[in-house]
Length: 56
Image (cartoon, rainbow, N blue to C red; front, side, top):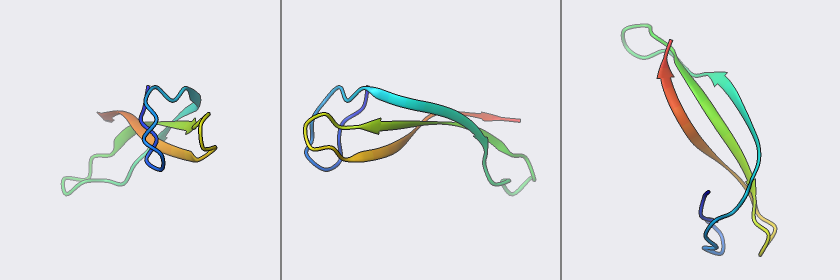
């Protein structure tokens, strides 16, 4: 669960999540990111947050 950056509501439910490859670091290794999309039930704001990072 996440916190809304606009109104500060705690425990905003996850709406959708997906994995994507991030940019390579200085050694050329890429990060696999899991991104979560949230929508606040209080103010209606949508926002994203990184759920996990892994080197691939």
